[in-house]
Image (cartoon, rainbow, N blue to C red; front, side, top):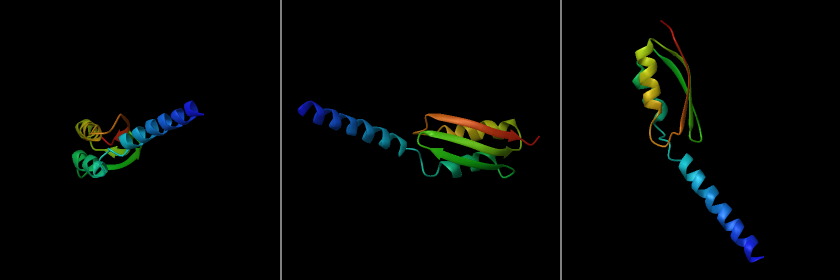
Length: 87
């Protein structure tokens, strides 16, 4: 019974640590990404745990790179860039 209790406690600790890591993604990330891409961009930012998915369009390759760089902020493990260049 003691082993079972210790296993549950360890599992709870692992889940708590995982949940904390996901909460570290900046709440301003979406705004930062849109600002970095520029005014002629239309970007949707989906944050799912430690993964950020970018969809929509940007004006050129430079804006695409800036948006992806901004999305790679603190607490983000993976960026899925589905942005399309309009030019």
